[in-house]
Length: 117
Length: 112
Image 1 (cartoon, rainbow over the protein chains, first blue to last red):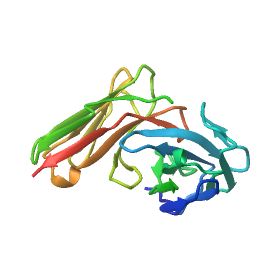
Image 2 (spheres, chains in turn orange, purple):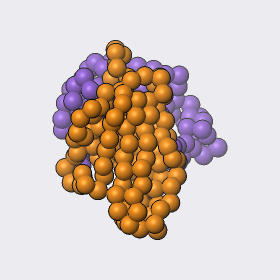
Image 3 (cartoon, helix red, strand yellow):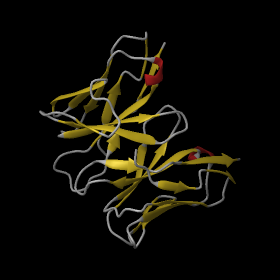
Image 4 (tube, rainbow over the protein chains, first blue to last red):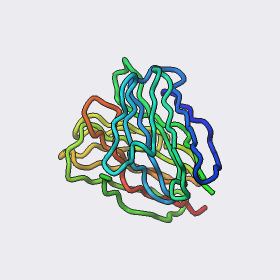
C-alpha cells in the first residue's frame, strides 16, 4: 500500500496561537489529499479536499479562514489551525491516494493529536 | 457532516467467535472500503470493494459489496485479542476519486 506520514503526532499549543500540521505522501504523488477531524469515540468527519496547486475545497460548516490548507507540491499538504481555541482540540488525520494507480483506495497518515490550552 | 450508518455500535465477543458488522446508506456508492483504527492511530485499510455483489477476503476478514450498492458487510472469523479496535466502513463520495465518507464505527472488544 501507499505510505502517508503526518507530523507532528502530538502538539500542545496555547490559545490564540497557530499550529501547522504536515501530511506527506512518501512513495507516491498525490494531486489531492484530504483532511479529516475526529472527536473522541466518534467517526472521521471530512473537513476539506486539498488540491495541489490550487485552492482547497471545504466541506459545509468548516471555516476556511480558521483551517488554512496549502498543497504546494505533489507530496505535501499542510493544515494550519489559526488562532487556536480549546474547542479546536481534536485528532486531525489526512489521507491521500496515489496517482496512476488502478484502485482508488485512500491511505491515511497516523494522525495528529492537537491540544489547545 | 454526512455519515454512513454502521451497526452494531459496539460489541463484546469471546475469543474464537465470529463477528459481523454492516454499513448502510441511502446513497449508492461505487467503492466501499473497510478500515481498522487503533487508539491514537490513523485508520488502516483492510479491504477494498469495487463491484456490486463482490466478496473479498483478507485472511480472517471477509467483506461484501451489497447488491444494491447501498450497503456492505464485514465478517471476522475466529476472532483473536488483537482484533480489538474500531472498524469503519467508508463509501466513495465521488467516483474515481479518493474522497470518502465514513461510517459511525463499530467498537470491537474481544474477551480472552
